Amino acid sequence: MVLFTIIIATLVTGIGSVWIAALLLRTRFGGRSDSLGPQYLLSLAAGALLATSFMHLLPEAFESQAGAHDLFTVLLLGVVFFFLLDKAELWHHGHEHNHDAPAPQAPTHPHSAARHEHGASPHHHDHHHHDHSHPANGGGLRTGGWTLITGDSVHCFGDGVLIASAFMADLRLGLIAAVSVLAHEVPHHIGDLVVLRQSSANRRMALVKVSLAGAVTAIGGLVGYFLVAQLQDWLPYFLALASSSFIYVALADLIPQLQKRLSARETAAQIAWLLLGMGVVVLLSSMAHSH
Image 1 (spheres, one colour):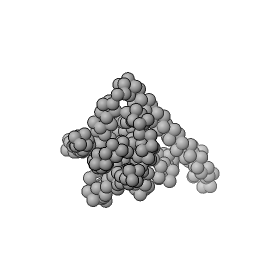
Image 2: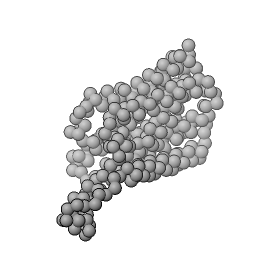
Image 3: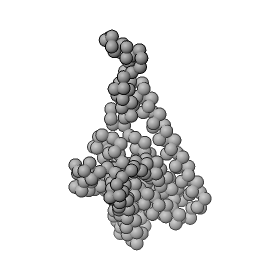
Image 4: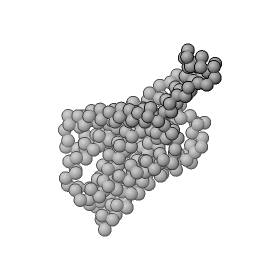
């Protein structure tokens, strides 16, 4: 009975938080994100990811018995790992694009031949540059996409272990833990969906990918049920690793996109959305800690 309850609670928490986030985006911004400005949504996402890392995950990790030196080592190695993951992703997309690029055709018109002999026309050069500035098929993730999914999966796995631990201690405590995780995951998944929607033209695929990462919560619940005693010592390191992914995505992918020359009003709005993302996560995390 406890195992069945853990499975249901972790599925509802992991996937339900993603769908609630998608519903909130649809009802609040649906179809109007361009009028509000992607910059504001990216600011919200950056604030949510940074606050999740620094105000929720890392404090949880450092409240444990794990040594600060070991946790900072995992944090550092995690940032380096996700940097290398991004490099591998960029190399893969570049290799695919070069492999699939059609061979240039010989010009048939005399004027075309002259242009070909003396150099490509500006229009041809612009088109060539445009083709190489986007992922193939328009569906690939930009920098930070797979990093975000990987870190989200690690984070969700840790959430599942935490929920399982709470349920094995007390049913009521488990329900409170599940609701708390659900609440603080919603703003975080809003950030995930915003990032992936910016990275891919296929919004439905972004929802599927974040939902699959959320489903890892159930795997963490199952593993936690059978190995809760052994995994308790590893939880702080899971939290530090997940933090490294969110920090990397926010600082390496989102913040650089926000560093644009804007009017004073637009800059104030950008900062307000950044603080809003942080504030919501901090509020929900403090509520979870109080329970």
